[in-house]
Each structure stands twice: as structure tokens, then as C-alpha cells.
Length: 415
Image (cartoon, rainbow, N blue to C red; front, top):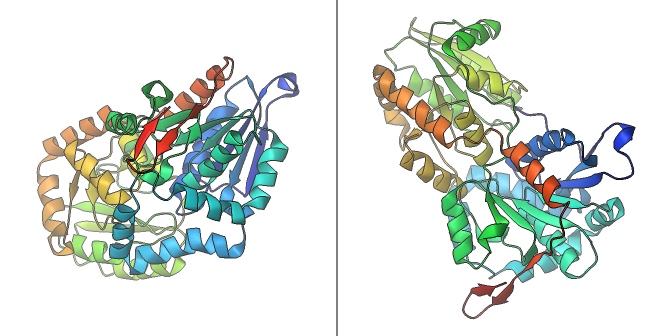
């Protein structure tokens, strides 16, 4: 898994660029891990730009009060675990363009004074947001002429939710053409929307069979045995135990690798369960938190897990087909729909049939190969570099922000 950024991380290019280079501010929010991982990928890409003088990456929530942090981060995690149906209802109910943006802005302004101070004191030329919270705030600062910077918003799921909408901005980056069309129908100008993909670390790449065998050896795996990768996410919250028990029913020889993340209790339980594997055909390896997720994905035959925006982007870059289990209602269900439509994944709605569905796939390697081809066709492994290059080049030319005039009664939008 990609290393999480500290609340404020800085990178400076050699002194030869000082004085005339661009200042980049990347803002994320640690509500889940995907937004921060996307910011880390962008930070790495901007470092490659000789025109950039300084890059700073901030977790916006670190500069708010504890109650506000808990509302955004802990509450979301608790809803995922204990009330996913409510989370799905809220996602659909709140997905109405311009309905709640003014109320959210008022709430954000009451709780983000330290963040505003960090932003204005840095004096960025370009701001890039991988979460809607800082995007809404910077949009307001630009519209009120309290900040002279360009705002770009990077959407970190395949689909688009209304909370990502900002009334003042310079550019949107989205994953799919369908998402761009949706935004154009809402009144956003198409020339300010780029289909870039979701930014991921450049380590996520596909490898040849020979390279895969070599990496498997380095990871302590059998180089010739197919790998089922089960991911519990960076925080280790998933039905991984249930998945492992279901996979014990497979008749094919496989090696199962489980990534338990930071959840040490889950790691212990998986190790205990893995020691009881009933078949000599099945090997089990349990890993805790890792910064080598790109290597584990690169050697896997199938990824079994939840379809978060960053996870599926990383998997597609590796040409890794997915078996989707327990998607979070809302954004992950929508991500799932796109993967199924494009032939990159299958979905298992009941754990009782997981071994059956995975077994059927393993019986047809030609189908897995086609899913791999489909994944690579839709992958955008260079999204972070694409975004960085576009923004650095655009900054060299005059560009006024887009200012949307929203008619609340009809929901229509004009520029």
C-alpha cells in the first residue's frame, strides 16, 4: 500500500529553480485512504516537473477541530462497518446538484480557519484537490478574491457525486468519458474537463509472465502457482475471514495471499485460520500493512475485494481482474457497475457461492486473460503525470476561472 502522507509534506527542487518556479498545493482528506493515496501520487508527479519550485501536500482534516475530523473520518468508517444501507441511502439522497453546497460551505468555513491560514500563507499558484471538502473551500476563497490561485479538482471514483461540484474552478479531472458527459449536462464547459483517470503511484504496472515468476519468487511465492489476492484495505476492514473460509472449498491448486492492512487483530485471526487449511492444494500467506501492494498486484491472478476508486485504478494498471465482494453502497456500487459493464470484474453477492464463482473462472484461463486485456484497455497508469503536465503547462497561459451561475429552482447551470 502507498505510504500515507504526513499532515504537511514538502518537497523542493534544486535551488536552480528557486524564484521563478510554480508553487503547487495538493489537498486531500483522510476520510478513507483513497484521497490521500491520490494526493501522494500527484505529489510524486509534480516533483518531476522542472517548472515547479515547491510542492506541499496537506491532509485538510488535520487542520480542523477534533469534532469536525471525527464527523468526516470516524463517522464514515463507522457507517461503513455498522450501517452501510444508511450510507447508501445518504449517498443517493444527497446526490442532487447544488442542493446542499451552500450549507456545506457554511459548515466548512466555521471549522477550517487553520486550514485557510495554511492555504493563504503558502501563496500557491496551483491548487489540486482530491477531496470535495478543500475544493469547496478554495472555490469560495477564489470567488471572494481572497486567494489568487488556480483550482483543479481530481475526482477519485469512476462516477461523480454532486458533492464534488464547485461553483468556481479552473479544471476538473475525471476517470471516464461518461463522467465528463454528465458534467457537461450539468452545465460545466467541456473544454475544462479532462479525462485523465484517477492518479495512482507509477509502481502499479503490468508485467510479463517471466517478470511475474521472478517477482513471485522474491515475495516467497511459488512462481508457477496462480495467486488469489484478498485485500482488506489499508485499514484492514473487510470480510477477509469469511472470504478465506469460502475459498477453502476450491478444488484447484492456488496460493491465497491476504493483505490485512494495519489491523493486527485481523492479521492474527487470518494466520490462525490459514493454519487450518483443509486441502494440500491450497497455500495461504498473510501480510500486514505493506508498501509493496504494487508488487503483490502485479503477480496476482485475481483480486478479491472491495472496488474503491484507487484500488480499481491500481488493479487495472496491473491488468488484474477483480472479484467484487461487499461493495460499499453508493460510490463503490457505482464503481462496480462500471467494472462489470467493461468486462473487468465479476461480482459475488453471496459468500456461499464465492468458491463456485472463483472456481469457474479458474477453469477458464482464457476468460481471465480477456478480463486482463479489458482492464489494461481501460487503465490510465500515467494519470498523475498527465494531470501534473496539463496544470503546469496551463499555468503559463492566462486563464480566468469558470464561474457557474446556478438557478436553484430549476437546477440549471450557466457559465
